[in-house]
Amino acid sequence: MKIAIDARGAVWFRGTGIGTYTYQLVRGLTRELGHEFLFFLPEGSGSGVLGAADAKWVAVRENPDWQVEQAHMVRAMEEAGIELYHLPQNGLNLPRYLPFPVVVTLHDVIPYILPQTCNPAFLRRFTHQMPYIVERADMLITVSHYSKRDIIRHLQVPPEKIAVIYAAPEPIYVPLPQIPCREFLRERYGIKGEPLILYVGGSSWRKNVGLLLRAFAAAKKELGPGAILLMPGRATPEIEGLRQMARALNIEEEVVFPGYVPVEDLPQFYGAADVFVYPSLNEGFGMPPLEAMACGVPTITSWASALAEVVGDGALQVDPYDATGLAEAMLKVLTDEKTAAELRQKGRDWVRRYSWKKVVKETVLVYETFME
Image (tube, rainbow, N blue to C red; front, side):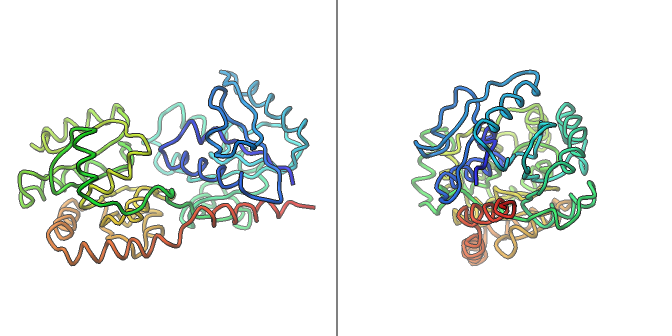
């Protein structure tokens, strides 16, 4: 079977959940025997992202008129004799004319659930295009049963048209010795302090970082002057609001915003942490808690949305609206070594159920349902 994959998200969104999903999926598919794959990549990116020198790929020049861009891709697929097209990043800009089946990975429908947390331009684009996308797609893949229920509720998609295939942490996330990781943070980023509470995951309102700041302010009175809350991530308008909040809570010096951190450095951030906290209000999946658990870091999440399903028994789950409860959970992990050790073990045990080999295998099974 000849299958085309829009792999551009592996470059565009690297470091995000959708970017990780696309990156690991396409790299896994290059090693999949029995089918031929054609990958679309952004012009100038090169094939290194695919991890296979012999992988077939087509460079796509970005065009302000996405229909011009897509017409180029459709022609390339027709010339290659493609029999199936997979769009792993929500199907946006799906062409109107495609003479073969289409699979779309729809990660979540957060723009319908929390529209106030979305960029206005993205919100308009998503809500305008999504009814057509789910109607045209012959099969949807999503990343949790929670997300599947949301898709059915908001877009009236028949359940049998949606396959749930869990994502997984990348293979780079493994337990590392804490002392060398802390030395790395100090030498590379000038970061020092302990205990070290880590948050990774963006600054959108739905990530509930304000609750984390309030909980840290409450807990810090018992953690001592060396405690820090470390929050790597790209500079966004929301970051300034979080800085102001930290200032108002009198924890400005203890909350560290190191800015963008490349993916290859993140395992050292996890390895240096004493606890990872992720109090998000809504997730279609929630990759960072699994990354932390894979690194052997005691992990605290909220029980909201897909998180309860995804982290299971591997993390301590709290009420996402209770700052006092989160502060108490953080203190329990940071002051009770037995609790911390149990969470480390539970996290490592739980996360073993997720793997990219499994993701690739189950995705190929979806493709094969369209074989004649």
